Image (cartoon, rainbow, N blue to C red; front, side, top):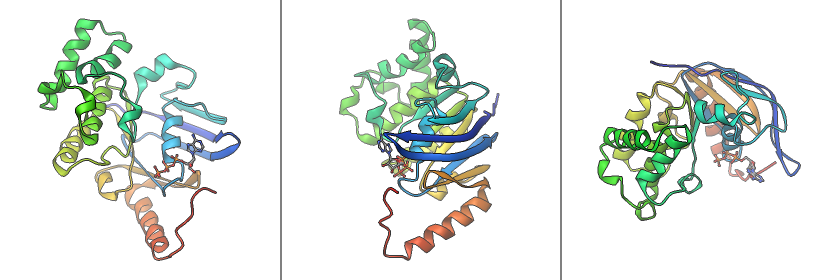
Length: 242
Ligand SMILES: Nc1ncnc2c1ncn2[C@@H]1O[C@H](COP(=O)(O)OP(=O)(O)OP(=O)(O)O)[C@@H](O)[C@H]1O
């Protein structure tokens, strides 16, 4: 059954070593498909990490389905899964089967049940022959796919995707897209490609660590793309960090 996650963010700020990366962010999200856009270095990945509870806000609050995930790790494992931009940040185990089974065992499944679920997700992707494959021998795009299988096997209510299609070839991207479009939980999807957000309900635009605009996809994407094209005409795109 389809579920919609409720994300409540109040006056969120996040700093590292005194450098403020996110600030003054207040946002309430209750849509099944939410896109996150913004320039390089605007704070999107940091936002994803804070929403997922991997890091705690410096001030303000973030809850997902009523849970403060940075404080409640049990709830975090149940509620949210995050697919990192770089699969190397995610993978722990040598083989594909072990990597997928690990998350399921973390959720409390017995070894036998985790093995069964692992097989089911490999079958669903038509990749049962990957079970014993050594992850180190896979390409970057294939590693990305392993991470998606491992995370989605855990069936989190909210799946946070940080540029999940980076480096994927066209058929693999299409396969991943088909799978994600059927995902029953909510998706929070960071991307630089507007085409990835076809069919999405809502878009959040993050600019220099703060909320620039949030609303329906056409409204926000039109404003965002107009601003990006106008910046693209400028030769001084250095920007970097503030
Ligand atoms: N661990 C860290 N230490 C210091 N600065 C950091 C750290 N992580 C992120 N930053 C800084 O925070 C800002 C936002 O980074 P973040 O990765 O969240 O941006 P992004 O919008 O995801 O960028 P991109 O689109 O390029 O992936 C950048 O200026 C970055 O240099």
